[in-house]
Length: 437
Image (tube, rainbow, N blue to C red; front, side, top):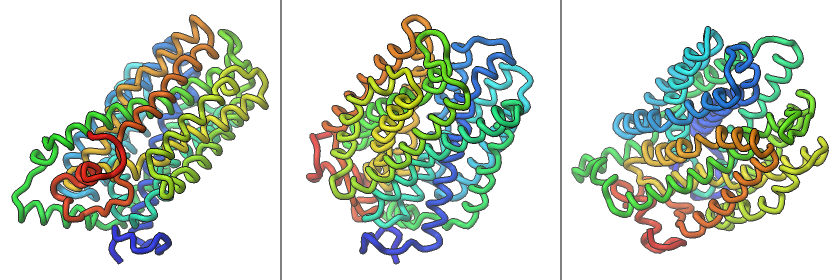
């Protein structure tokens, strides 16, 4: 069975396809687990290192800013040497760096380690998603895209539970959380050693050799460049949407000043667990529905549906209503995100699929990196509810509008006739939905 044929929407995955998908899922879970460890305990870290919360907020910014560097380095390597080896090296690199964060003696060393960690994690999503989506049957990409992206929610859930058990329950230091982060990374590394090289990449490289085409020729194609810029804007809005509804929220739930909800640490953690479950449900359900209704319309529906939920999410004062509001908002946010792995890889030319989706995603992530410092500053001056509302409402609108003016290449066959030149870009220009771009 071809990894990309999609002959049947219900065909069973081979062991290689399963291993590729599970490894990508675990890698993305690891990314979120480590990122949200910092978010959940950054008040504790600030106290130990005697820095302000605003300074601590830049610790997360540092990680996000370095991710495009990793996406470029590992993406270029993967398009030239294959997906498998760069992914193995990347996992080894970020596993060691993440573990070393547990032993940082001061804020400066921790900041340097987070910068290095950002490089490692910058290569994870693009390469993992490219390899997984290239192997998954075309008619099942929507479902597996939704599941894959929920590695992010799963990582958040595991980080919340780990914080609840290790810090709140056992009273141990935040350092133990970073030490534990190496476990899922090592599991992912083990599974990735059992994954074969992408057949799509192998076929594309052979066609490039025969046609004497190059990476540069494809990247500088006007349609590919236009789409590259568009996807960076789209991913900026998407990342601001997710970080804007997640990064500050645990602090808002526990804060007793500046309009915070004033909940206990345990209650806030359980609310985080609840809205992470909502995120997982939303990603899988709407990722699957995108196979029927299209990638674009599914994203737009989720973004618009989130708008009337924002007051419940940001203005509620009791644990029950806050739990409901955050649950519903994450169903919508991660519902839209569940479409993205399939959407970005389908919009990417075969020749540069290791580089293209990862770099557009991470550049968008980088441009959204100031979200937490801005939200923290607004919370200090105007209160947490105001900060949440004014930073997330415009982004939901932006996600909907940017998606509407874009295109999609749902169900395109990877490695096809157009694979060595424009692939997804050519498919949409040939008549898929959306405006010219």
